Length: 334
Image (cartoon, rainbow, N blue to C red; front, side):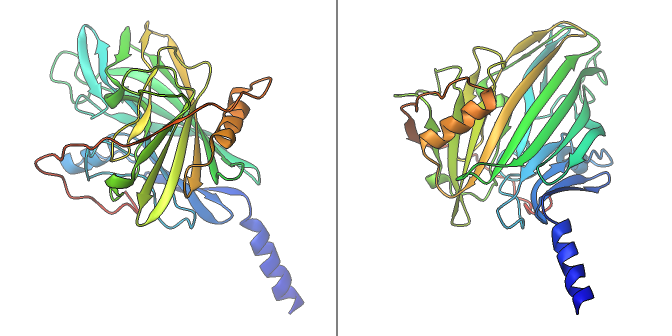
């Protein structure tokens, strides 16, 4: 009895804290206390047109509190290229021409290898090294590799009332020529896309500014969203680091829930830029502004506490339905 009891206690102790579990060639799970909290999807399969579409870029799923299913979107559904927490730009000007590595019409973002994997009782982190190519281009630049990226994601328990904290840091380097990362806030940057099955009528956004207008404002320090999925509210805050590019605009008004920061940059060949964002995940309604601001100060390293901002809470704008919506795929493994 004592042996069985001690074995059970040892097993329980082993699942406390963070773990990384890899399904080679497909995804890397991040577990906290034995439950999946996030899943990095990194497969790349060009064997068929459909598989290439489904695996044209890596992205991060965020899971529900039970660790049973993602609250973020995979392939299929409305705007199939929207995937969890992801990065890209629709207009990358290279060699005088614009290429689309947002909807992935011009090429793929390919995960090559992991580095710096770590998991313990406090946090988990890993770096995904990727290459951005023009494999789908129809001109002389077809097949060229134009960007190299090191994408580091760090996971920690978040201060209450949040559940999970995710730091997303991406360093993109121009290779094989100068380029410009541009476009518009709807089609570029570092963004979060909830699961396709959310209730579009219940999506709301919060901004750290009185009378905020996300169609015209720039450089929000953070933006939050609340959405309802299968009757359960979820809230997400994306915080920008002070070193991120100035003049950054935000897309944060769509009822299907995609929102995030849209920085632009000009890069000479061999130059790089690092983008830093923190995502806070809460189960339920949006936490109060003072809790968000306190968490933002912790991320930005503010020497003194910032005053609680006056906020604007806006219901999402209705999105005109396309003539035909692709059928959504199961969120559990996509």
